[in-house]
Image 1 (tube, rainbow, N blue to C red):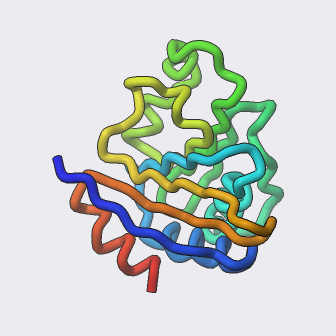
Image 2 (image 1 turned 45 degrees about the horizontal axis):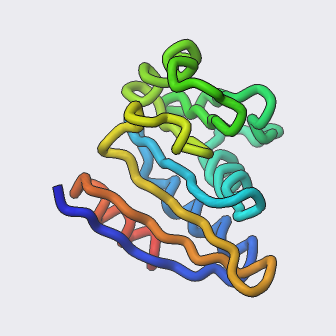
Length: 157
């Protein structure tokens, strides 16, 4: 499969949130975003903005650093936000129920390298990198599934 990518430079947390909201608007059950980046790159900020934009009623959206997975009921499906940083073994992915969630929910996965070969091949990878200031980020979106091309283009306008 052909690898595609698109890049965006965010100059503020609000701009990063707006990109997350635009991208989140087109997500549906079975979509997975793999959120990559170092600690402090903005993965949780991106995920929180996306989740809040999809909830019917606003609620607290904590980082799942300690719970590992937070699930949210959206009007049309479930959304799972997972922070896999603390996982030591990919077998724990199966125990958490993530493989089923990849099929039936929208999934936002922080630290997707912990998935090993369990990462959905049709996922969209969102890589966040800090630039010269704490507010600027390079955000690179990459995918092989052609279904992402139009959705990424719409999110980047």
